[in-house]
Length: 152
Image 1 (cartoon, rainbow, N blue to C red):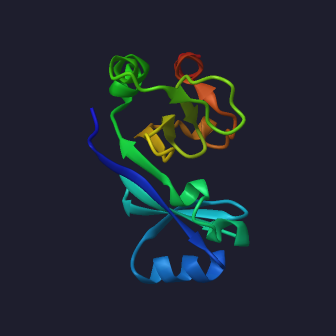
Image 2 (image 1 turned 30 degrees about the horizontal axis):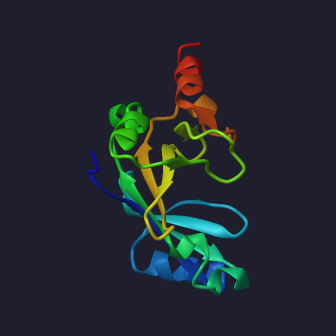
């Protein structure tokens, strides 16, 4: 099921300085918001997330204890069954109350979260193709909602 690394996260003190550094070493900016920026390691395959702020310097911030593994979109559709077969409990992401895999159209990916035995945050993630008309959407959608949207 797991095909490779999708993302890793690093805390940074100054996002602009760090962005300049990662551009200098040849990484391409994927997207940025107020306090985070993501750079492609392998375009559309893996990226590194930079998180700015003093609170990100503590060793317990999720950005320091998080790995996302790359899966295919087809496998994402079956990920809950696969994790359940391994007796791994899926956890909601952020303020979400559901454990269902979800799509982030503005980022071009879908994911589901779970923890390892030490409480490290793990994620299964896949890239998705997003039509131009939906690239602005910041709302998180279930896979079912996403596929329904694409059929309209």
